[in-house]
Length: 304
Length: 141
Image (cartoon, chains in turn brown, purple):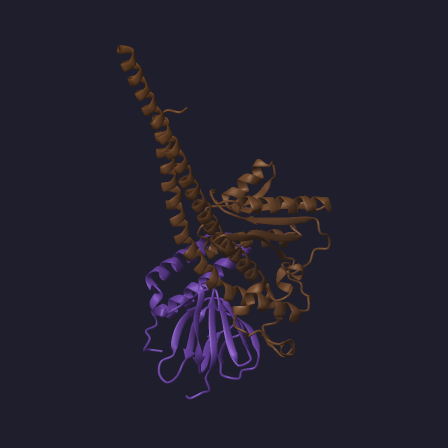
């Protein structure tokens, strides 16, 4: 049976932990609101860039000498960009990205391809290294508040690797933000453009975007100034940047949401623990009182 | 000048800057200066850093400093996608001049590879355009 003092010390330390987790929850909630606003602000722009890339690519008809548009003849090296956080204490936020990335790498290897890891955030970089996997480059220090310049740095690196022939495909993994309690791993292919997610069906977020996308029959009449190929030369790197920026922002919102939820759970658990410990302490105190009474009564009986 | 108004939307990565009816959009593409009126033919063009003017009605147009981007016209709407868009009052001419000076010194001194040079020249053009917008008084157009 632990003594009263032991239990009291434990209660005090659990109370301290609860104070910290509550504070972290508040901070995450405040930052989440900002991150949510930035994600929402970017969405129309990102969707418009995607639509524009799609129509320009269709107008160009695939025939182009630009290295960034070139499709490599052999698929050998696949770049996997894992976007997660710099810090932990956010539930499954970091680990589910690493797990998805490692699973994708294993699938690549099964097909005879070579995966090449890129990491955004200290956590995925550290986890990959811990597993003995090589990280080609890690980008760290901005996961909670990414700037456009951060996305540009990452985009430059992967686009350079692609045009230099170091990579034949580029995929990105990030936590898509749905709500504070729900984040899902999203996987998007960025390059080559013909396989990119942008070339698929209308993306989910397009419902709220302005409906200025032309009808297919109108598309043929659009005047391109200069040629669609030249526009794509600048549009594709911009599209990659925006896609990565979007992944970073969604990931930041997800990180704050995941941390807020994790810290709320931790605070609740601490509350339950404090109740249990308080009960235990009261029992210990009552036992001590009973013990003392027994001793007094026994002593009194011994005298009589 | 009383032209038919049409809808113009300006989007940046930080959100929508402008979404309203205007009579004319005046800006610069890689091909040259253009003015877009209502019922313009469908167009997709690349924008260069310059001063963007939106003629809303009689009187002074709305002025913006525009960085690189794209303009898409179709269905009697125009959409401008730009990396940065600022009102002249938000620009700090002194800070811009300082950064431009730094960049020009780097450009003159460094013997870097073509890619870095290309990016630096683009940044130089952007700074020059912003500086022109920041320094021009609204009245003396």
